[in-house]
Length: 172
Image (cartoon, rainbow, N blue to C red; front, top):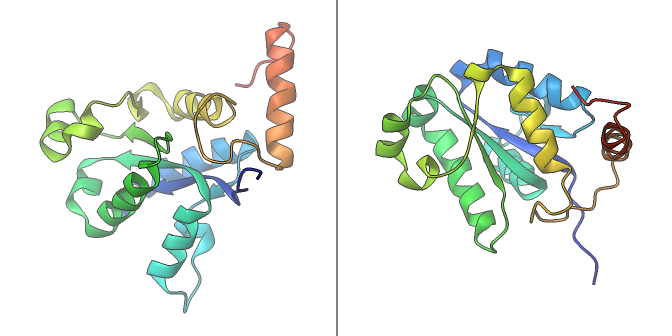
């Protein structure tokens, strides 16, 4: 039996107060060829918020969690995070944490499990965070669900990686 195909490469969980950095990150990931689930692009008037978020979580290979003081203070991002933890129960890496205006002590008080994870940090620049995420998402050894993806973007990224190994192309 083959792997279950996922519609999205990444689901981005965030607080609305962090929308500016999230939009920049989503654009960088999209330019790199990834398929992104982001509320702003997927939710329409009349949609059920819970149903659309459930669909996005279930049909995404990874969940980027933009952790910030605003994220910690809100209810919906916590629900999304709980869903992502549930998806990881099969021993697959799903959650890709990104710190935004957050320190280790604050995160440790919120979630020791998340504080233990290696994370991207927006203080290093959105391009750096995006590059690190692309490397994980496109790595066939990432232990993510349905690592095989039919997206044209993924095939393009694979070609870039081959060229980069030969010293001819760089992803960023």
